[in-house]
Image (cartoon, rainbow, N blue to C red; front, side):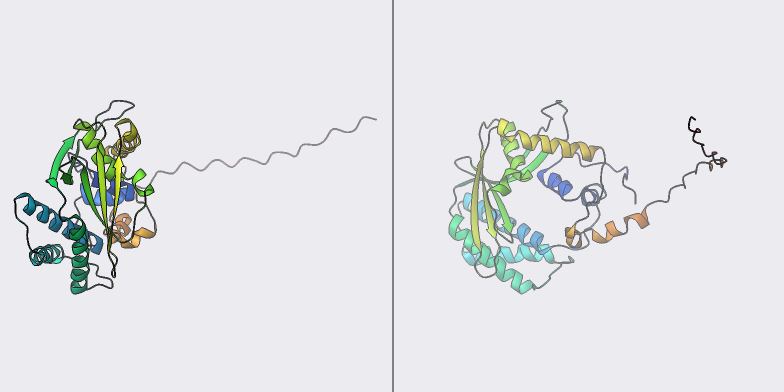
Length: 291
């Protein structure tokens, strides 16, 4: 398996693609270019996907004028967790399906208690906007994505699950945060506001943290520079590995480890002819001192 497979890149980019490339360019290639199946599914991805789906369903039901009972919402969560794990190679670690379901339900109840009555206007709102370099004007792949929720006051809400709490600095260079603000700028919003709702998956007492980010287009310039630099590297098909302690938790660890063995052999380089051996230079004699 070679670095440059010759396969086409996805026609659009996304916040997830930008984050995946920064985490490891080789993993990006395996996932988005070669389309390899992950070797396992992480619990973080299972819980995050199921919680997003269930919370989206809850708010969609309320938009339709219905208020589901808690037991009905929990059944939806059970079904979403089953859909995420059925037939998948889940790395369970110290969890079981039963304990994972119990933890997720606790987290869901905390969310609904605090945000169940949120005045939501849209759920999973799609966008596709232009991405171009501020310096050169070069246009890259369009940025495509979905906004988790939009409140009736036009504030965008991004839902996150995490194993530990965040702080304000986590948002300063966050590629997803910048991507969603960029989408709002491109849709004509001068200073959009993004509220990040972080559901912290603590086993005993799960909690929710909220952070608010508001930027003008000029204040989001760092993100555009970073995003277009990443896109330049992707379009140049630069997919080196990024060795780190995180490799042991990578969903493509085995594929990456076997990459050199699977690569097509190359012709041995032609060596240069050995230089001819030169006779040793005679030792220089110092001039005799003057009498």
